[in-house]
Image 1 (cartoon, rainbow, N blue to C red):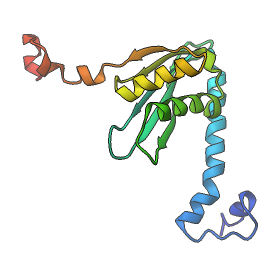
Image 2 (tube, helix red, strand yellow):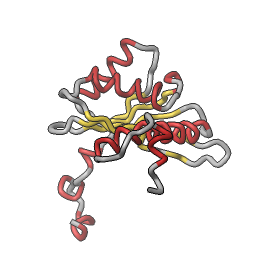
Image 3 (cartoon, one colour):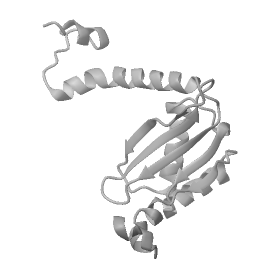
Length: 168
């Protein structure tokens, strides 16, 4: 009863919160707006230059996550918030990823894409195509900085390094 008036403040009067589906419809929009405003406020306290770090699932869920990396003014602290995690209905393509990155930067974060300095992602062919599409169809030129996570995540097995035998 204590919380009963709250749904009427953010939705049509008389809405009853009777199921989890109704609850999600009632609160998701206002929570997302609040989170977006907090994110933009945090980023407004940073230098304008930024980088993106993104990764996707190769099969199955078809999800793409994106983080923005910036440096705060005055304190020079690196921040790296997760700004989107999107589930796609179709198989990820270079075009999907390019659109997701641009939409995240412009719509979600309200950042100027001309200040996009680096795009960090693995060397999957769809990521390579996404950056080529961005270079071809826009004036944005983030440096392609492929991560080496898939190359270096098992160095104890790949390198002949006797010093590593103890931690293998």
